[in-house]
Image (tube, rainbow, N blue to C red):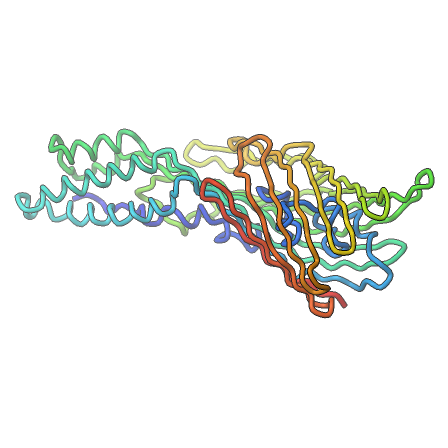
Length: 414
């Protein structure tokens, strides 16, 4: 009798970081989600509003006008998924094949003449589907943030709490498993008791969640007769890492967050930024996220270990703005690091916002990975701000390789 395979539990808890997110490396425009900025191609270093500056470039908090009030983000939340090979759908189909094969194999010894042809057919179907997911990968990011910004002419400040993270899943299918099932399908082998113990296909999941808790301050200085703003965000940074490695035949989603696979680390970090207006229409900015580099190792599980890398991400940006139109360009000067086993990315984004009415804004943009390791995406969104007191912003991202994402954000000004 062949043990029941648990492949039907293989995907969602690893592919979707939302499951281990009260939050959630920064495949988005950086290590945050902001519906306005993400709709504009992930820009924001020189174009963020004072109320969202704490997320993109704290120096822009000085751009608040005398009539601007306290701004509260409650909350901003977003997610993005890339599933090039449609691994999620394939594993759903594979789950049905596993259950069917197990049920038929259990009956084969009772009525071999009737059931053996069905066992061969089911084994062949399962072998074919294992071939279909061999080496397939999927990854996702998600994030959430709340912030309170208090503008003033001397030292504007903000409180921010955010979480961002990434999850990667790989189907490590053994050729030996495929060959065994194919031999059953070809009639040269039989389902043997205990054979499942020698099957070696595995599910490898890596996840990271980073929580930042910080206080940002900014001030405008006069340098050689020219106003230049600087901002800093000292923050406590708590990181949780997940390293789940198990046979796909014994996968159990409830195990993913157990202590055996999880470890944490707490440290100090800092964001910083600068900005200046060239004239009434042009603004230059530069931001530096996570100025203190950190390497954090996962737990070693079944001989596998990885390292999550937190590195400074420096991004210069420029924006052009009129009463109705804002256009922006951001280009990362340094790469975004993740797990050591995952390729780096380095992003460039361009986008625009047009204020159709005082309370309605339309946005669009494009974000590209200059290292071609992440999918380029087209972005779009809109904002509504009745009475300029409640601001609802929505954004969507779409790219090749079955990539999609969405961001929603609610702001209040008092």
